Amino acid sequence: MDIRPINDEYSVTGQITTGDIDEIKAMGFKSIVCHRPDDEEAGQPHYAEIAARAGELGLEIRHIPVGRMGVDAEGVNSMVDALDELPRPMLGFCRSGARSTAIYEKSQHIRG
Image 1 (cartoon, helix red, strand yellow):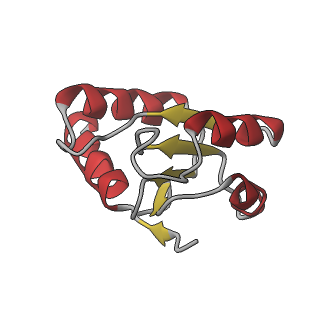
Image 2 (cartoon, helix red, strand yellow; image 1 turned 60 degrees about the vertical axis):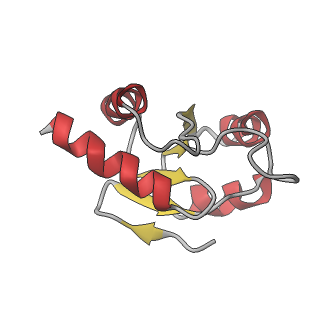
């Protein structure tokens, strides 16, 4: 994993696996947000698999998929809700981390 901090409350990374979640928990993250749609790429873990392992470890998780069309208003509003409702520090992931960064930055304009 290449975890890149955006600030003290939010970091991003590329695709994670169920095997990464123990390390994510050990690093002190309290929640995860998946910005990757299921079946975007052959062989990627489905959100349900990631969510099941995160739940076993007591991490909160949310699925806010950002598709090929990019970040939309509904996604940004869902991200604002996640930031208001989930504990931090939070880890966002997608294929590379770019969409997780973009949606976070756009949510900050709304959160003020």
